[in-house]
Amino acid sequence: KEMKTITNSQVNEIKVMEKIEMKHTSYLLMGQLFLVIGFLPVLFIIAVAMTRRSLKHILSLTQMAARIKDGKLHERAHVSAEDETGALAMVFNDMLDSLETSQKKLQEANDRLELQVAERTDELNSSRQMLQEVLDTIPVRVFWKGLNSEYLGCNKLFARDAGLNNSGEIIGKTDAHLGWARYAKIYKAEDRK
Image (tube, rainbow, N blue to C red; front, side, top):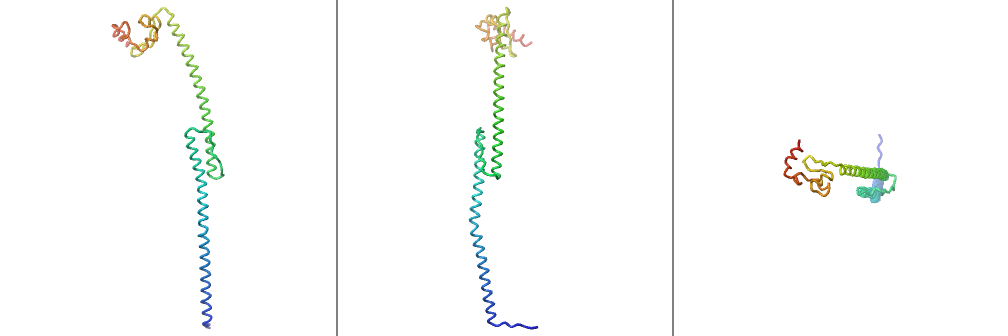
């Protein structure tokens, strides 16, 4: 087995080479560290910008939702991107179209119902008026009462006998309020039978 002998100059040369290699490695590590540290602010700025952009769209949609709650269905969300917020804005707009269509249909149905109610009310008033005319022209006294013996209506002859100017004045009165008040208890007992 042979042993190699290294001279002092070779040892010194190896030491110098190791120092150079260590410095080179440390410079390389420091360069990489500065590169990473240098990119961190850039990455941070990019992240903040992307977050602000996303939040801006979400805030815009939130404000629109508040206006929709107040009944402003004519507005539409601005679709500025093909990302999640853009998809959300498109869904928002579709929802608004659907709500606006439903609201128009509901208003149309309400208008039709109001017209039908007005027509039926006119028909009912016309029928009531005709019935009152028939009751007022027959030669018989006619009246009708509620469950508590209060008068709900009568014809002209009965109103005249009760000392009233017209048949409308009797509504809500009882026998105790009319000219035959002394018989009110007897009439009330008859009403209950």
